[in-house]
Image (cartoon, rainbow, N blue to C red):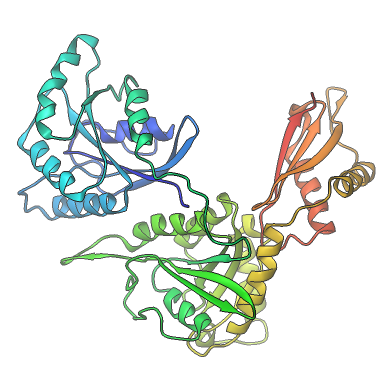
Length: 437
């Protein structure tokens, strides 16, 4: 199950971006005391107690306006509402209830989604009596908050997490491999899905964004069960198209989190752009198995060095994915499509691999003898014990005398030694350092 999604909505200049920055712990959104500064949705991860979730900041919603930018901002907010599991509606406690608040509340009520009403800019406790007018919005109890001072956000978030989908155990068997196909629009994700399945199960079009929702397709091949997920690109609302690059990100993130293996699709004709690196980065950060699939390879003019040069470019641009295998395919001509599922099986196996503790400790002991741990001010790092704490991705804990002595380069050395000894192709390996107790 992917992380829950929380959308922050409201009319312009009620403090949505300030609250967004509070929830994600960084100043990501531009905060300025002018309406309309936030024009696109912004995505980030938030955390409250033991709950992790995605937060979407939106542009202010205004009704009855014909301005093109305001119209696009309204569509952006509506798209964010579509994606959300829970909606936080922000209002301005100093101004009180406005016609725009009433109109927005009616729109949110029609969605049938849980809405938490927050009355912002109540910096002084004496102002808390101003919240009672907001009951007329019909969204339940208003929560008095101050985004600029961080007041009342805990109570608001307690209410938000109550509405998160329950974390039910997935009912699919352990031997089912869930594979997501991700990438920016028009790299051929749907064509690749059809080529793998061997049938026209997904609409294919030259127009970027034909796929509107993530599509799950269970199938079996050579006795192995899979669920293949073709992720959405861009959605069309009337004559307004939102940014294809931005819209692909949230859909990709949600699909990634629910996957065992991710096929990161690149367009061999167009090469690599910044958005490719951003989307692939989500797969790495989420700890999923990754295979880089270069599609449309049939359309690339080639000589005997073309594949080598493209591989080198991928390794330079995706340094954090140096563990990911690279496949060159053509969904159109079915070239090398048969290599994808065997590689998926290998990566899924590595992603779920568990190493015996005794073997692991022997390996690390030999590694420290070959290259002794670093020293700092005369004090040497000592690795006392190693154990594997988790799989998917493989996660190892090094118990040491002083975690401060562990340099990232030595941590990388230990990771490389583990990778040399065991086949961890296609999966990130996490190394955690803890003080021995």
